[in-house]
Image (cartoon, rainbow over all chains, first blue to last red; front, side, top):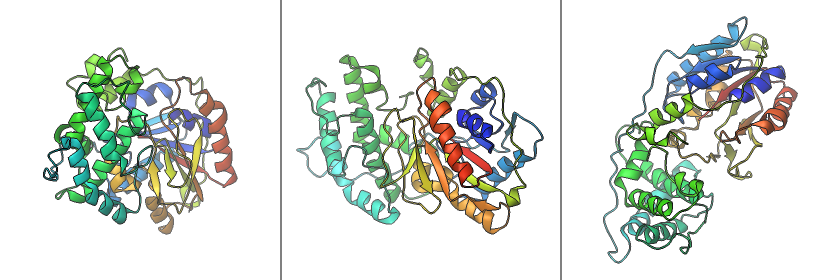
Length: 227
Length: 159
């Protein structure tokens, strides 16, 4: 973002970065930066809170009054990431002959379809359709169970894209199923990796792929770095 | 990635911010500084690095150095960023938490800003290390398009 701020300011535009990492803007010195210590991925801070988002924009636009730059200011509030698993009931086991993660993914299909109908958009679709999510998990289950990752054909092939699609399917379905307050930063990530069969299977497959000598990007970006 | 082991025991955002401290970043010898017109007369655009794109637009590839144009009235947005290292759920619940287009329209209606730009621009934050394309090619091209639309102020939103 700071590179684009420099480039665009040079072209005659006045820019303001809503910075998420203070040391980065301290080093890169964009013309104007408002450091916002919010959950990463939420640069305006709080979803569905228009008043809070307007406060962020107001503090950002206030930097336009500075006579010279670079200028870095800190937003007046911190919003911490949640990182605790969201409470979301998973479908009961239906077909005991299927791997648990495949059965689970099938059971979430109706919730995913409701989410799609209600929201009118989905982040699923990089390499998988909704139909292929259980198939992809079946392939990851085989790898996690000891089959050589080089011989198992994963629908969609690109493991990073496959995991984005699997998570989009699960997380959009979960938004339909969960009651209570809206999930904070990474609450859904914690739910997926710690509480779902798909998450556990994905991490086990990732470890098996790593142990099987796959190139770093092939396995590492299947999950967040700290996992 | 030499300090991956140090990430163990941290939560996700702590780990990423710790990595950010040691991130090798391009340096700029000088900081350009443009004085815009008064905000109530200014045209404002959003530029994001969240790799947002319209559902029917070309997807971002893993090393995409280009940009996608997001018309001001588009709401069928997909987040095409390739990193798993940040929260995607906020965007799934409310696109404005990444792309505050409705907030800008409210500010226009209230007379706080002059006008919402007709087109907004989206890049992928995961760029090659030298960022030369975005610095010398796609970034200046997007800036020229924004200037053509009469934009005065750009708010940059990372993820």
